[in-house]
Image (cartoon, rainbow, N blue to C red; front, side, top):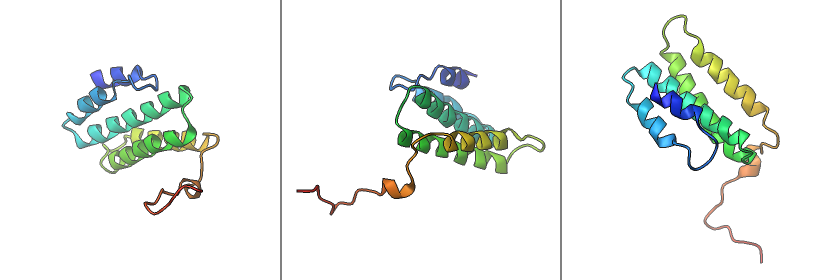
Length: 118
């Protein structure tokens, strides 16, 4: 499968062919496979960024998107297929193991009325 081959080459840089892999997975006709492989896409992107040394707070969104995809796949999985559940658990363990991952409180959104200190 071309999409998996592309994600195997992710290096955590802007030159990663993320959109090409996503297009491959979006073409899958099985809703289970589409959700499952999109989850792999997000997981591998986050893991590549982790290996590349990107900041901890930039990794969480991709792991969370992967977990959402795996959760959707788990709901429609073929009987006896636990792959999506296992991948969801792996993403959770990776997220929990990221040092210096800020709390939600530390990432409060910037409001329009906020101004820089004088």
